Length: 523
Ligand SMILES: NC(=O)c1ccc[n+]([C@@H]2O[C@H](COP(=O)([O-])OP(=O)(O)OC[C@H]3O[C@@H](n4cnc5c(N)ncnc54)[C@H](O)[C@@H]3O)[C@@H](O)[C@H]2O)c1
Image (cartoon, rainbow, N blue to C red; front, side, top):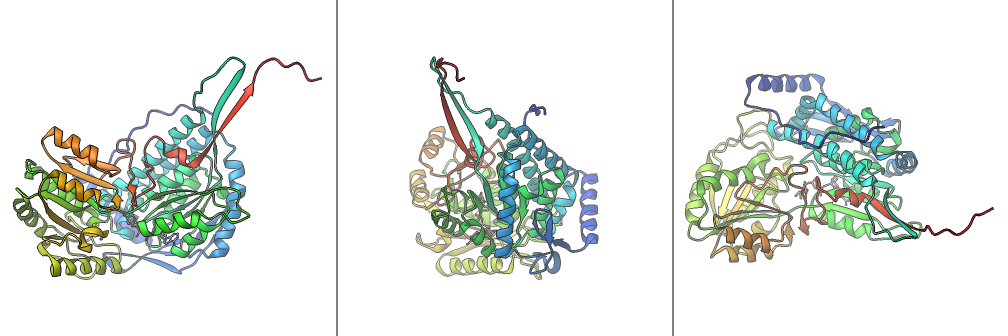
């Protein structure tokens, strides 16, 4: 088995401005619709159990059913963990290069089915085409990147050697990884966590988001068809209870979770327990929510700031964990910024995700639409609505893109994650004042800064607690290996997906020290 893979490079996104590519997208969505409803089973080893307890629908046209899924119960969780324990024994013994080859084949599968997978994301999660395509590319990147990382990790690390002593450091898989994923990057995020677990020799049980079982099923198909042994990867579609049953089970060694801060904290609490039969500590990798702030200094170029803020806050209807939620703007330019932002936001085109001419798609479900409306009403009551998008279609789960300002400092609108197309602008005295507000937040996921003075940039880099800071650009769109991604504080356990060191969360280091002095022959 060769261990040489070409150097990692990000998968290029489609050039959507080209007419032939656009025609392919239209064909892909037509083909998707013609295939009809996708049936998603509970999938454990070679066994599948069909069902329709979970129904995922198109957020833009909720009467359109996209996938029907079985919902995993406690017996399924039990069976999946039994299978994974057996699956780990074989998969964990394989050389990293062999496992990497399987992941690289899964990446090839996704490349081959790229438009089909993206079309499913357009329908199941209302991801607009550029976002859906980027999500598939990111999934491919995770597979390729962790495949290479696992080979490097297998080589171990160099230690100091003294005469008469041999020291080796190697890494072993931990056992069973429970992956619990969100819906907003419905292929890339579960793919990243599953690929990291598999690359390092663990068996994986995936409990995807209830809103996107179809996307998770396609991912598991890609990995199984690429050669992941059936016992090494199980799919448990279901609601939160299935995830809770999985993470509390003593057979689980590592939990890789991405989702809200509330659920993440609950998982950290549950995982800390060590019932008598459990001979290990569980490790939790948790990537959670945020309330991301962008600081705008008085010398910022508004021609650059306004489009970057609109992109950061409203692309995919603000449903990215990295999305901008608060703008902390120097008082000298606050009113000018609000006026220009208002102009830009009022003309945003809200519409169906499959249309290439829209800016903002619907939000994922009715409760998300209601949540955004609730925060908008609160902002209207206690502050001022500076802008609302003018034309918002009826019918789907559309939420009105909104900019609010003049909110009281303790307003929940400024401190709670809304996860929708809503941006609050605050007036600050200067950058230090802005940094104080950022520092007062329990979240620390992404942040942004627009400033021309290099000293200001250095000062904000030094003061910001966030995991990913973007300077003079939009704050979304992290790329594997270019911007390793993950939050601090209550936004995450401080690991960086798509970066060096991530795989270390999935392995156990072992050091062996051997006395190599001659000590006679055993006869
Ligand atoms: N930091 C990141 O990298 C990142 C990336 C994407 C999304 N997010 C965050 O995810 C959230 C949106 O996703 P969501 O709505 O799917 O989040 P969520 O927390 O509601 O659900 C995430 C997953 O957890 C499961 N779950 C729910 N309750 C559980 C429990 N008690 N035990 C175990 N599992 C349980 C859900 O079924 C789902 O699969 C936002 O807060 C967003 O900021 C963070």
